[in-house]
Length: 429
Ligand code: FES
Ligand code: FE
Image 1 (cartoon, helix red, strand yellow):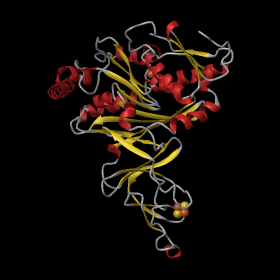
Image 2 (cartoon, rainbow, N blue to C red):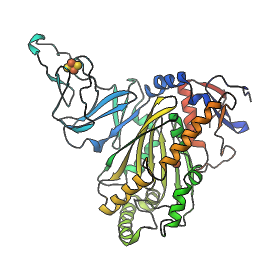
Image 3 (cartoon, rainbow, N blue to C red):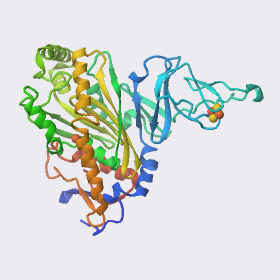
Image 4 (cartoon, rainbow, N blue to C red):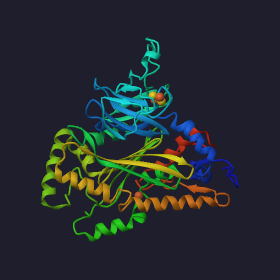
């Protein structure tokens, strides 16, 4: 055990033998760490770009910021999905200034160059002033992102051409993505709009919070009380479950909880219509997957984290959430609701109300979490005198509970490996 009295470096202090796992608070405040995270994490890892359901028809497009770059995500006339840097090859202006839509072509507003949804330059004003073979090598086309790939409808990009395959990168997280994607026989779709908000806290605090089963009862006491007071809204199911290391910095908690689930919670909680609907969904899941997997899909809640910044929360609705740091103490968040394309109007309504009322930025949960994260960030002002966060819960146990802190240790070990921040001690989480 070799604890520095005042850690001058961002540090992960991992000492399994003594059941110590601490993270230096400097890791949440330091501007050099913030720069290193862009260079060593966001520029090197597979990052979530969007869902296939956002590009249904040829010409559909979404323009979105990913790790500071404006990206144009399109389905072209050949039905191929593409992602380009949304920067005109002429002088760099944003070619597409709409957030989403359907277009046959994109015209840059600055000098009027026109591009197809496949990124090729179609025309430019004053073309007679350029040689006939001006774009023979494609250098005047939109520049595609170095790597683009998808898994079960989730599209990811990577700015590092030499990154490992997406499949290898996702490692065991694929099994949990399957559990979500298998909730429909005809495919999943994003529904409703995008929730966008900012938090005045370091982005890693949201990572921890998204897979933190420990905080729910305290931080969200108002919601739990509300459910208790609404007759029939809580089942007697106790909180119970496990945390898993999924490899490459990904982690998940899978657990039972007393609230209902929109898929097929075994004990339907919301009226006759709901009971009939959920029984049907459940029966079909059993036919497709057998009792055990069907039970897991329908009954268990999942909060999954895919390194570095994608959260898939399959709880009383499914949230797809991604976020980027804008400063050491600030982040920008985007979140979407995911649903089976073929669910009934009743189930969709129930899902969307949960997405809004519990998970939304003005709902029961998110403002509680935002307050907790911003308070933590304020606490780090005293980092010289009070330098360490503790994440050791459950280290003494063989079997990890959903409300232990294995998931955070999985994240921090990968963060440390990639940023090369000072490591103290040794061993795995
Ligand atoms: Fe786009 Fe000139 S910058 S046409
Ligand atoms: Fe929370």
